[in-house]
Length: 466
Image 1 (tube, rainbow, N blue to C red):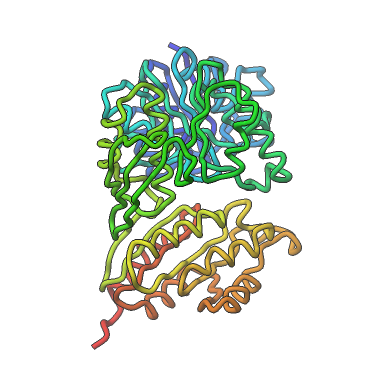
Image 2: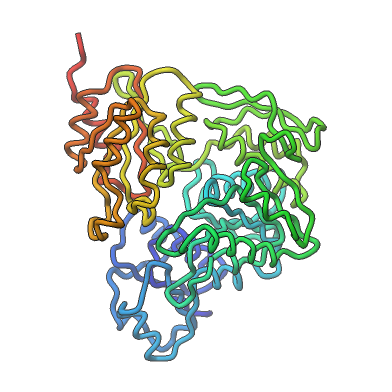
């Protein structure tokens, strides 16, 4: 039995991969700076006891392989021990390729937005249609028991464009042996990794070059950057979206308070209808991409659409966290201007009422000035905006997003906005000012100090207006 140690095991993808290795019979262990739920519970349920803290003594000579997490760098005691002892090591994408993807039919779901949801939709639709599909996705779906599954059939993998490890700065998705590739859209992101949009485009071009002639490239018809990948593609190409020229197209779309209904056509021929229990045009597009991928992998289109009508989404993607005194609180992972705008527009389409956006600039890109004006334009869809403190306060002033300038820009656009740095003050302000019928969406790619539960508790404790 091979012994595998994962450095950074409590990350979502790392923990999921650890559990999948255990299912395949490996002796699995690992470590992380902090061992915490929910991933610590996932690991414990699989019989894996992670070590808390990074120590060189965790790296023993009898290890067959060490998997180095993306967040780990030189100077980490365990990394240094691996290098000193000349032990075999790899990145997580390399592990995924060699252990879960090779010999199977990888479906790689990519794009700046919608990867997690589209990946889960595809895996759900395939398995509900009778396929024995495996998957590995960096998120938590409401309808699936785990974030990963080992199988001998097609394998759905979320194709992240972020770098692979400290020793491999190429995009993760270049490791994934793609047979079917879905591209939802390409926009500049990951300013800590990519110099500009051109460098990001190049990563996607390299991915397309890896698709075999027997494969398939599925592109969003609504995204010019995605469509540009069609030129010179080495395999058949299909498009999906709202655009009149899309192969897979959504028509007669109806946005409701808790679901979105639409018809699906393929090259102008009716395929079927679906009532998707999710909000927003972006989720319609995600569903079309998943349909194209699942059908491309052999699933019947009718069964795919029926399955999508029973798919309830992914945690932290426009997730309703609670309703108190007629005030609804949502959690959303949005940390890019496009995602912020589309999330707010989805809520606008779904129902009337005052819309709040509570935004924490937290990701490597969101903390930087590169999207200063774009965030203002996106957040202006809301009626009231609260801007929290930039998470990375150590950035140079000339690079850092300005909370004050963002608020001033929003005010010029006619939006009521204020900068409230800390979570306790945000909770007090929103709980005191929100009214029945308001919807409050909290947007951050981190924990944001547990603000969701704190806000719901404060709303419950606030005196009702007589």
